[in-house]
Image: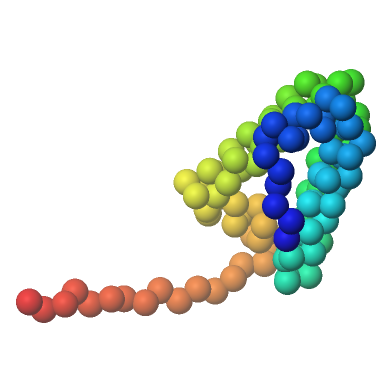
Length: 113
């Protein structure tokens, strides 16, 4: 996988050759997607890249795009936090009550000292 150029190089590209910067962004994104061996995860990455591209495209200017993507990231992090704090709520959304699943709870005995 290709390494990201230094920050100063990226700034220079943004100012003087935005088309090259966009090509680099697109190429690196594609490399990340293709590096994922699991086809399901690869498809999810493509979907995420599409969402990001659409938010950037709909934005009036680069700052608006940055704000939209920042909001998107905050929502995803909040969702991840909710999964950690209340996984049962997330499971209720994924698995409807009409399709209960069975679980086995194993009892671990306390070791004798």
